[in-house]
Image (cartoon, rainbow, N blue to C red; front, side, top):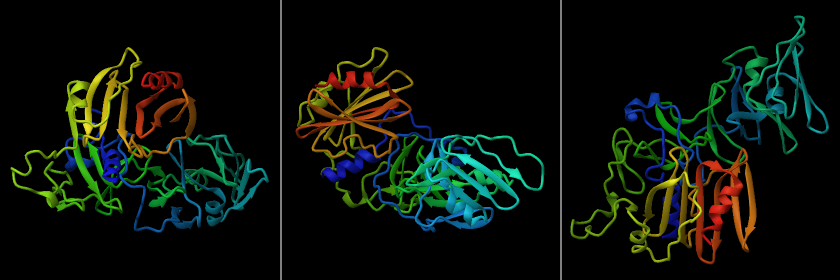
Length: 387
């Protein structure tokens, strides 16, 4: 049951949470622009029918061997030496991995780790191109320098030098690179629909957009006109019809007390308490600009209460013996563990803002998720108010 609960937490995009989605229906998927950070993957296992080490640059299959791609500021980063040498460049990197020079007898360039500035000089012409920013600075990872893949549009003087292909990140997640750009949201690839979250990670399992649920197989393909592996019917557009699992259909009498939707909403905390086996607590120090948005339970095993100021949501969850109460498997740039009243609290976020806080007290698990993040001292104040 707990494993099922964790999958539900991962799959559920909370009712009422802002989720840009299908423009009108999946029939109009081409209009999709972006998606919510909070759409999460059910499993961290990935599978894809592609050569995970091959990139397409300048019309060539560039093999990066054991290296995976990296995402920085939404840009696809690739190992410099492996890619440049495959394209005929001589690469020299200083012993501290801070500088690198490239030369192919026609053009040359230099890059500096941490500096988002790129150019090239031609041996056949006087001068060099004006410095350009590509949105991400070169970075050193495990004694290798990574650069934005779009640097090869510049060096090859071709705005379409980068092809479209599946690639695997160093952490094992799949992304789809479309002419050098990271794909986000729904993507039609070889007549199959795939869904990538705001970090560009290919999703699998159940995802929700615009109030509709869609099932993605282990290889990322969207299911349509079928029964999903867990027994639910999806139509020709991939949408779940909100019916019961085909494997658990019962008579109306037997089904009278069953719950098709794992989420139950309540008007008050007291009403939610009646269906839970543990004592509910709620944060007391919610910033004054936030108002109650909803109160609900998930499978009557997790309590959650959400507050919103119209632009940002604060979601508090608690449950008994739940390994990942937040259902959040995103990887954050900044992670810190602090001690509050002898309780270990993990804080995760980016750009100086905290987006997730998790902690445990005895057999109870707790989390606070903040859509757009908030300052560390503000979220600490909320956490303290639950003790």
